[in-house]
Image 1: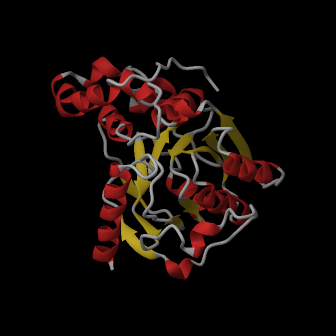
Image 2: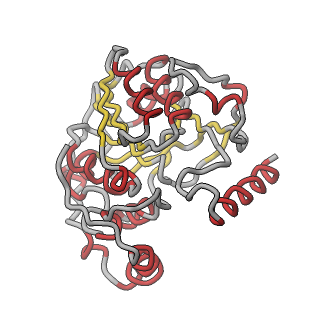
Length: 301
């Protein structure tokens, strides 16, 4: 993995993030913050058996990561070579235990790639995504979250859709989602003792997507290698004292000038959950966020 330039945590970074979001990116040309995108004609229009790197981060979400990793074991691709990259911290012992288990499982066309890092770098997801983007050897990179599950025919249908494609960014046209799950829901207890698990697909409902978002960003490898992931935006390469809201995802789409192109991909599932790990435990913001998601749960029903 390429070593990228990162910056130590700063208490002012939150202010500069909002300044960038609300002011700077609306008045400063995008070219100031990235290298030129590779021209369409210069990008590789790969056909046949493609290569894909799946990139996710995990901090205290091993109970969902185990579903994701299990999906690669239960439904391995036949039409592409997959590298599964997971950024994690050794301090998160439950996640490490899960990764240790899957390291022992050999899966056709799948290579495991665990990247241990300091938790302060892990908490700023843009750092790991940037390292993965600049380092990847794959034809395509799917930036995702550890609560996304890649079920039957997902990866092979993706391989079919990407044949000869050269556009910058794609995303699944539709996904399958759970209701907003409480922390004590049986589905969120899967990490009690790590093992290969399977989902009950009947507990998910179809949900249409209109644009790419953080866990659904499928990026051409030539673009990823050229510009990284917010590589030249310092605020998104700055370490953090806790998991941060991922504003770098909208910044990345601004950098590439696209919200993505929708494509038909089978078997994309998401576990939706009320409690989020990015807020400090028992903090006011955590309580507000949990209350908001409970309201969202009622509205969805």
